[in-house]
Image (cartoon, rainbow, N blue to C red; front, top):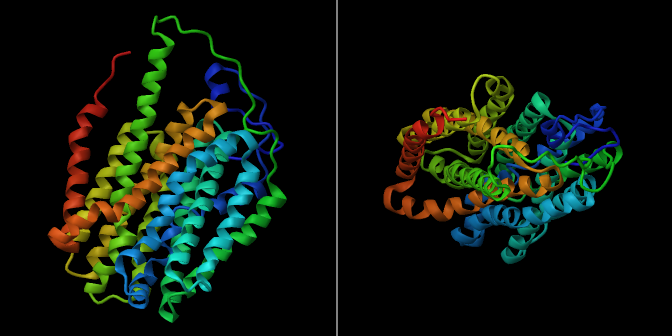
Length: 414
């Protein structure tokens, strides 16, 4: 998720044309700052998940209380394209800093806000902040690195996001046991991260990567318009995949607290269980650079989606908390492989001058999937119950990936 430092880095577009810039990598402190910002993103909305049952009792409105979780995702999805445009025009650093400041202010507002409608507004503002931070971080890392190093650091980004969930969600569950407002304190973590970014990260120029020469016209007779159309279809396909996979994955924070409640689990256990998905997501992300050297992007995506579906099927068939946690661990592993793979593919496809905007589209797909998840799953829950909803979602996801495998993995003609 980019902000260009004073150090010169080789861009993906430059690598494609064979013109590699002399690169002096970003400092360790700068890399730490950007990856620390990544840790605050993916599960930002889910920090209050353990508080949802208690909030529903306070406000006597299950629908709007759940919306406090998902409206953040909607705001992220809608604002990310604008954030991408800003990162390309203003640079990565100002967008990242502004997002972190807004993150802290809007997130901690839940400590004092009493009116539910105002609380929903602050949650939407939090979404604007996360959209800016997520987009800026991805674009910064993609600018800084190319080749295998880019794959490694995009995997580190997802690992950092997962690590944030591992650390924050169990703590949120413990805090929720003392009062439903207590988890809102966790959003203050953005303050020291913002200070670290301010001190260590610098922009070399608006838009990040340096411009590169236009590659020579291809000699295969394929019109530029046809290439552009093919590129657009590939990018949109990756967006759609991110949307669908996230809608399934986000059943964990939106539906799992109520499923575990039926099994007798308290808020602390809910936080630990949801954090399990981010723990194996962390492991999957760390394994991604190695897996990427052995499998094609299509094979990695299919493996990740099958793992997600299998995990959710286990959750649906579970008759106790132990099997639920096992299913969450399997599903989280799939997400840990899928997200950095999609980021890497889009980073390779995006022109340097529009990298922020193209990567922002993935942010939109992911977080609109989060928002749509409870809406799409609601009728399924009503028809089949919570366990049945996980069973059917997992089954459809795994079978869908298996059906797509022959098409995506077949050898292609050159």
